[in-house]
Amino acid sequence: MDGLMMRSSLCRLIGCRYPVLQAGMGGVARSDLVGAVTRAGGYGFLGMVRETPDLIRREIAAVRDGTDRPFGVNLIPAATDARLLDEELAACFEAKVHSLALFWDVNPDVIKRAKDHGCVVFHQVGTVEDACLAEQAGADVIIAQGVEAGGHVHGTTTSLVLLPQVVRAVSVPVVASGGFASGRSLVAALALGAAGIHCGTAFLATEESFAHAYHKERVIGARSEDTLRTDLFAINWPVGSPVRVIANSLTTRAGATRFGHDPYLRKRESIAQENGQPIYRYSTESPLRTTQGDLEQLALFAGQVAGEISDVPTAAVRIERIMAEAAEIIAALSGRLEEGV
Image 1 (tube, rainbow, N blue to C red):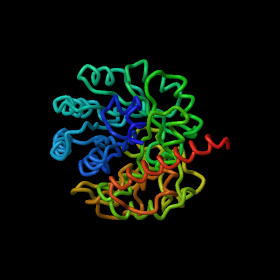
Image 2: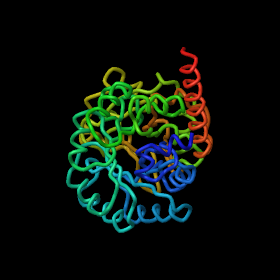
Image 3: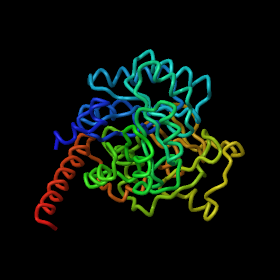
Image 4: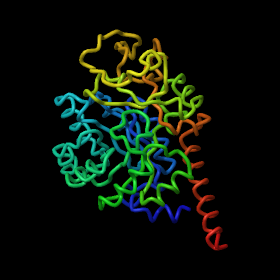
């Protein structure tokens, strides 16, 4: 299986052993998780959305203390103040990060700046149109995100429908995101033309994830139908930024009015704290290890693939399971083809 994976254009481009990418989940994807994923042969992204330059520098250094393998940083220009974004980019460029993963609106200027500083640029999209725009702006890899995905979701098309369309529309490697957490799903993604898979929920529910234990417990206890899309949790993001979360008391109270909420009109009511800073009801902040307060009302990001997640192993075990199952599936398919089935 290793030989097959090493022939992936994605693996050759980014220097990983397996085409399994860990999503740069804000707050959750810290150095412990990224280092573990990277050492296990995958490729990790630090989730540094709206974080201070000092924290970005510390987290990059912490990953490098444990591995010399390449990894990236996830930033979201559309959800970050312009001045802070400039400072974040400067910190990444000074540290000579291997790659940047970008999301939401395609920002050609940011892509160009990253390319000018030698970064491999990933851009996550939810439509074929944005995939083409990102490639035209210089992105090296497109992450095609289906509506099944957890966290912020920028499209309305399912992964298995969106993925082959994006593959046909662009000439750069495409990575599948949204609903991928197993070897079976990796094989399916490869069959549809992807060069790898991009996993969030699967790595949120690992020992090294910086997510709060309560969040992990809710993920492993959730069925696929327990997740839903809504723009209730919108503070800190632009208007019209839906997320997929596990249903809670706030989504139940909203009933049929899950959409149409303006974050700028929301009253700021603190319901939790993170390092002394308030977390407001309806914000996009998810509970982290150090969060205290009413965790049930926070955004419990999870994709529909939560229905397949039943435990909280190490990141290395998660990757080992994915790759072992993929090898079994490919061997079984090869056998069936040889038998003429």
